[in-house]
Length: 189
Image 1 (tube, rainbow, N blue to C red):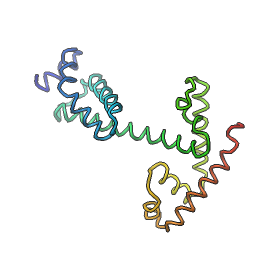
Image 2: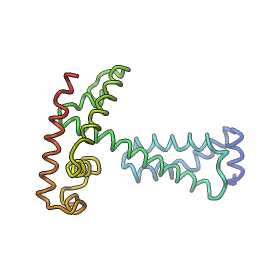
Image 3: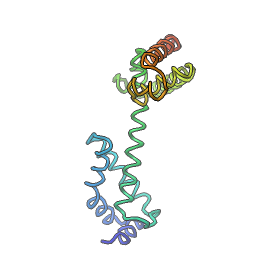
Image 4: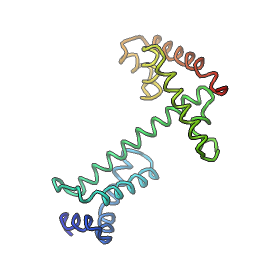
């Protein structure tokens, strides 16, 4: 089946075309996702999303590239979005862990059932954390964010900020203390 026949079949909703697309490209898409995510389960989940998106949007395929190129582009974008989203969740969880609020940041990790109430509480905590970080003095905020969110080592942060290594250590330490002060009353809200 040629690319144009495949796209025509997909756009028409032909289930045989969908099966052919998956069968032909599944391994390559999973490998692209795996190369970026380094987790087989996540790669398979994202690959599944890639095919759902491709099937849903086949009518938008312009034919400027091969179908495999189009699928790879979707796979890369989906994988990068997954990495970004997980980094944000991990960042919030790590900050929560620093201040003893980890279970409140992610109710699923604490084993609590997911409800609208704990969703609201989790959203409230995220807002509080973001506000607390935003209220830090600029150098503390930059050093803390580069270390916790971007996962840069202290030496690289010193280079980026053009300060000494001890200055970075001090900035991050002071940022943690300031955040602890700002968040200490969270449980009492």
